[in-house]
Length: 358
Image (cartoon, rainbow, N blue to C red; front, side, top):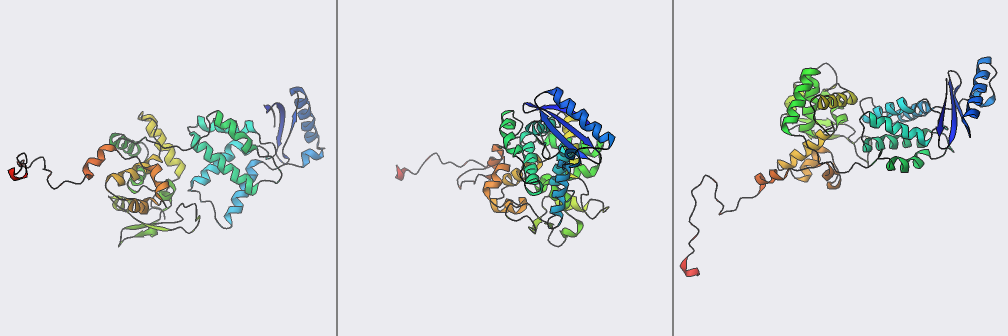
């Protein structure tokens, strides 16, 4: 299978054949690229390929596979994690391109395809950061820094960007409609998953991983294993209280698996997005449910240390970007003054000061 494309001012001829892998070469004109491709394909068919074809460079799919194998020794990538699905996405879009032929235009095409799938600039940026990690640890030495060169163009086109500070919070009506839609059109477990995510403010992957054996029935706690922490990737286990009905919600799940919510992150995200689309609810993502849960804790009067115990954040710096407190919620937390009257109490006469104080 061969293809010709215009990449960074050159015509690139790319040939992929089973048993030979992929080989590519760039030319000043499309005609030269086509002639070279016909020549190489003819050699392959005749069984006398030149050395450049026999060389069979690794594809990006093989590089990603090598990265997974490297990680498997000490820190395996679980199929319930976001990282697993990110690698699957990279393989889907870039897997057949040889690592030495990967170009800026390939990365722009990848970013555009991800945008068309509904991914935002921050998510696409995370995808490419993971690609950089894969290339750094599992790629061949001496290859040009295509990703580094592509970032200015991707930023200029608005395809990648920072996470920023989201202010979007769902209304109670939106949440109720989403939960009802998931229960009616998919399964009750998906509705319970989203509700549990809001109450506990857990990350999606954490909810997917918790097992029945991780519950402490005496203290109503759950053990979250290998919780995300930039300083400690493995063994960062943390006991977290299940509050506000989340304990009962967990126990209500059928015991059909070792895990309480035996679901895949991508499937839940897909159904959540589908629910929002069908219900005409704009600009809302599954991860926003974690933001919502954290914001509700602050609105209910939890202080930073207590919220951090539940959310798993190590500092206020990291915690505050997830928090959007509704201004009206502060009314219920203003300390009452000693002389302040309740609305339903008789009003005391304070309008006549003692004459001796005049």
